[in-house]
Image 1: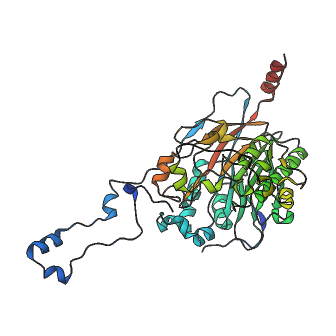
Image 2: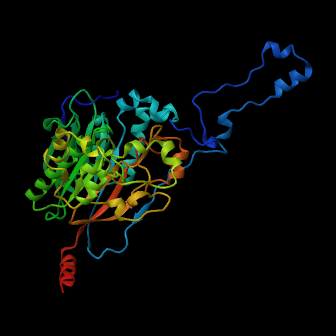
Image 3: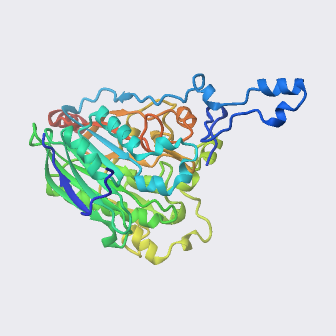
Length: 440
């Protein structure tokens, strides 16, 4: 029996051990076959002969010739990294599309066969993806069937933690980790409602490797507010998460940090710049365009031959588009126009070069999410000093992705693609050598 989201908002479960498709791939949800009628039989013999032999288009006949593209993903390894140690771990970030959201927003999946959207099928596909990658830590967003997923993942050796969103929404964030590889040292659940920042939530968990108890790691998991018009809230949520991550990391000996999630912001956006450069002058941006989402309708994306923009050109009146309250939400101080955060972050996918067919602006994937109203990248795996990405699971070429007509599809259980990266702790001896050499 399908299980709804659990009544408790946060808990642990432990291990016991609208764009049309290209015509050649059009697959409508309904179609008609030709059937002769009485009027056909009363027509002239030539007309009758023509009618009885007429072949009407049946999309199913074409499928053996025009199969949808196969979604194949491949690992891309980083070049030789002398600072990397042999102590490695892998992290996946995956917005799995809450069942309730899929049901309430059918307009986003008009080009997707209904059985691909069915939760029971999607659950099987999602778990097959996750268990196939065999990652050490799994960060999920839009989880409204936590018990069902946990029952499967616990049997595979994972332990899990869940934080449900506040308000009337049924989904939340979940994190699973291999119980034989990591010990949980501390966890912190963030309810942004407590800071007046809407009903979104985030998780921060500190781990210690079982084999190397000197190796500690902080992993964050967030699903940032979707609303494209509320750039100040998005920025406020991310800024608070990073501040808490920094404090928790320092508490545990400056543990390295991995931040996973759906940030609902594109690589061209001001919010991406904030994450990657640690600061942002918000007065260079319209808060309603701060996330870049409004430029990602499929028709817009596929119609553009050049990638665009960073900040807006400062026009008369732009300074006045921010109220004091909005500035305070974004930066923490109504008198300060610069948002800052205390971490030095890099994106694992932007760090490791991928195929030119899969990568776009800033070296990020062309797209991590695709449905009838959106085609673009909003998911990331950020990391701090102390660790390095050694390989990433590359995404899908934009051509193959577009030819699916939209996600979910046969091999992908969500309207997002998961991001998966392997990281290595820095080798302390090699790192010391590099520092000495650089200072010589």
